[in-house]
Structure formats: C-alpha cells, structure tokens
Image 1 (cartoon, rainbow, N blue to C red):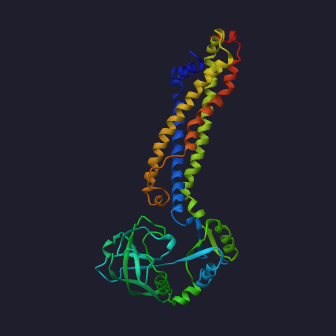
Image 2 (image 1 turned 60 degrees about the vertical axis):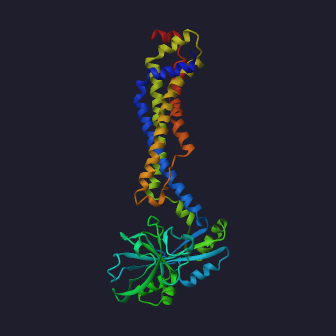
Image 3 (image 1 turned 120 degrees about the vertical axis):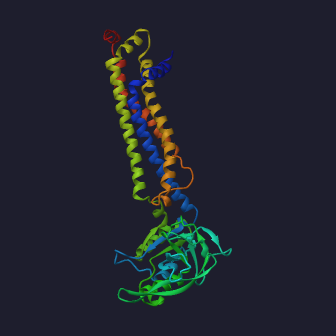
Length: 406
C-alpha cells in the first residue's frame, strides 16, 4: 500500500472524527458560492444590458436637486450639449401624469407620460402598425398592464384622457385630451419606473407645462427637463465628453457606471461571499490544526510504527497530509456542487421579486470557474496549512519514544 493510498484509506477510517468539521466547511462553501452566483447573475445582466444597446456610449444628465450650482436642463442648455464635439444626440427625459378621465368605458388608470428616447425604447408586445417609433402628435405607447389594469383593449383606439392644469396655488383642474394608442410594451420593462407611457416630447412638455400653469416655451426656458441621455459617437468619447459636461456644471454620470453599480442588497451578497470564503479558510485552517493536534496526542504511535518498518519521514508526512487534505477536498467538492445548484435556484427565485427583477437575468446562471475552483481548493489548502506545523513535529518524533507512548 503506497503512502497516498494509505492516507485516503485513513481518511475513510477516521471520517467520523472529522464529520462535524466537514459539515461546517461545506455549509460555509455553499453560502459563499450561492452568494457569488447571485452577484455573477447581476453582473451578467448589467453587461448584457450595456451590450444590447448604446449603453456604453451613453451619459445621463440629471436636473439639479440638492446642488444649487448645477445647471438646469433647459432647451438652450441641451442645445449647447448637442453642439459638443463627439456628441451624436441628446434625448431629453420628462414625465407628466394623466388618467382615464371621465370616460367610464375605459379601465381606471393613472399613468406617467414619458418622453420617447430612441436609445431606450421599450420592448413592444403588440402594435397597430409596423413602424411604431418615432411617435408623432398625440400617439402613445402604453404598458400592456398599467396601474393594475389590462390595457390591451386600447390598442389602435383613440381615447379621451385627462391631465391637470394649474389654476392657482395648490389648485388645478382636469383638462381633457385625446390620444391614440399605437403600441403596448412589456410591463416587466421598467427603465422609467412602473406605469410609464411613452409619447413624443412636445406632448409631454405640453402636459408638464399645464401642470405648472405656464406655456411650454416658458416651461422649457425656466424649469427644463428632469433628465437627458447624451449619446456619444463611440465609447472612447464618453470620458472627454463627461469631463466637459462637469466643467460646464452639469450633473452627469456615465450610464455604464450606473448600470454596473449594484443595489445595496446585491452588494451585500458580494461582501457576504467574500466574508464566507474568508470564514471557510479560517475554519479549514482550524480543522487542520485540530487534526494535527490529534495526531500528536492520540496517533503518534502510528508514526513510530511506520518509521520502525522503514517508511521515511517524507512518506509518512505525505500519508497524513493526504488524510487531512481529503477532509478539505470532500467539503469543497460538496460545497461546490450544492452551492452551484442553490445559487442557480436563488437567482431564479430572487428575479421573481420586484426589487431584483431588473438586476438579474432570466436564464440559468452558474458561478464563475475561478469562484468554483476557489471553493473547491481553498478548504484543502487551508486544512493543510493548519496541519503543517503539527505534522512536521509528529514525523520528527523519535520512533522509539513514539512506540513507548502506545
């Protein structure tokens, strides 16, 4: 029987002694790999979102809120942004609410008219014509389900809705308007929040100006848009254009940075994964120290007997190292298998929650190969590191003294 085989056989013989440590190591590995899989899913969803459109070439502009020095996104200001070198287009963002008005034949709803942007068009489920975009006049695209109501029956119809016109301080009146529904989009797409309805910019500006009690021209000159998407010619142009926007006192941020930034809860999954990997290494090292201590206390006679029958220190050290390493490898393998399966299930389950739906992909997500390798090998490496000192002391023990302790 060679020394490697001997170590594997001893690992099976004394498996009960290390069962508790193996279970703890497996649990740590499962939790670490499950969390890492969720984070990988979020990263994949972010990269897919950027790759599917012009996200790598986009910059978000936001209207100033807490920064009095930031510039408003007025029509004139956005015209200046369009003139910057490297800028392909500027797509303003604005929202204005409208409802089903007094028409009792319509399902009751409250939606938010949102300016249509070519770089962020919603995925259509149904359409009344082949080319829905760009929208013209009073054409709108509604969610198939909005404000809890099924709106599929409105496709292709011209219907009366109502928006608010300000008449005084904290006073307003409902104003009827007529829109034509030319498309319905997937309500799971919530780039602009729930219950967004898309319309041409002039219509949204008209309704938003009425809500403020001013003309559209006055609204654009004083209030301005709530945001805008700047699309540059190529990804390399994002940095210089962003720097210029900051110099011009715009509140600007690269879309790629925003998309890749995970929500706090998903970021906690990332830190939790690293924490559990660290705990896995620490527990494995402690288990190695314990196994080495057991060897010195209870099995030192085995070392003396093996030395007496002609085994070298290296062979004895290898046999006991294989025995200790089997604990780590077994726990790592079990953790890798269970963690991969539970991670895939966790991604699927979390995607069903509204909080995570936008940040996780729909397909199967598996952990990265390097993460699996770390989960598999870290316990074995840490167990061997912890057992190294006691094992060296054991094999250096005088064989006569070791046999006398039997």
